[in-house]
Structure formats: C-alpha cells, structure tokens
Image 1 (tube, rainbow, N blue to C red):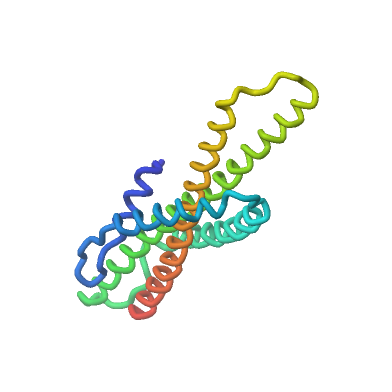
Image 2: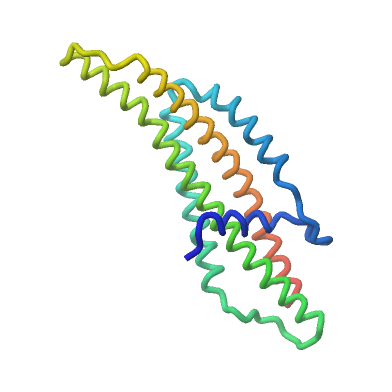
Length: 193
C-alpha cells in the first residue's frame, strides 16, 4: 500500500522541465499559497456555510472525475499499442509509460488534497456547532464554560480556515495542472501512432 508521504513525494517528483529534466522548485508556490491562505482566511471568518456547501459540491464532482481518470490509467494495458520496433518508437513508448505513471501520482495527489478540502470544510463547521451547543447549554445550566475555551475555539477556527484556504488553492492548482498533463499525455499518445 502506498503511503501519503510516497504519494506526495512521487507527485513532487513530476515537477521538472520536460525538455531538460531539470527539477522545478516548489518553495515559491507553496510560500505564495501559504501567504494567500492567511489573507483568504480573514475573508472566510464570517458565516460561510453556503460557500462551504458550494465548494463541497464542486470538489466532490471533480473527485469523481479524478477517480474515473485514475481507473482509466490503472486499467490501461501495460503494453501500449505503439507500432514499430524502431528506436524512436521505443523511446516514445517509454515516454508515454513514464507520463502515465506520473499522471497516476498526480491524480492520486489531487484526490488526497481534495478530500482534505472536504474534511477541513466539515471541521470548520464544528466550532460553530460547538458554540450552538454551549448556547443551548446556557439555557439549562447556569455554569458558564471556562474563558480559555472561547480563545482556544477561535484559534482553532482560524487555523482550520487557513488550512482550508491553503488546501483549496492547492487543489485548484493541482486540478489545473492535472488537466494540462492529461492533455499532454493524450497528445504524446496521438503522436506515437
């Protein structure tokens, strides 16, 4: 079984210049997304139940699409129908097989990030539900919750919203890259026929 760490490492290994095989740094993109996530989480501090519902719907649909792509890749014949025994045809076959393997990890990584978006969006709603339960409890019990609990819930809510915003940005980037790589793979397959 493949671990989350292996999925992330194999996905990150696909960031290279196709022509030169030179690795591309991920630090700038991740730093930018982290910075934008902090600012985006400030805007997400209000009531965002409708926004989360819309995000969950869209992400769920795209996860379904991604699973169909992953199943296509997993069930594709191991030997590709590339005619000819020439060196050029063999090189094309190796390139297509490498791209197919990389695409599998790209899809798997996207699914991992998209599921994280769904889990975090549900977790964002938990502090709100907790506050409602505390308000209902105040009606029946005179004992107030400790003061630190509100601060802890607020800090947790901010952290969840930052993580949600980061994963949402990463999922959007990964999906756009995934679509581009799927198109590139199909172009390479078409060239090799």
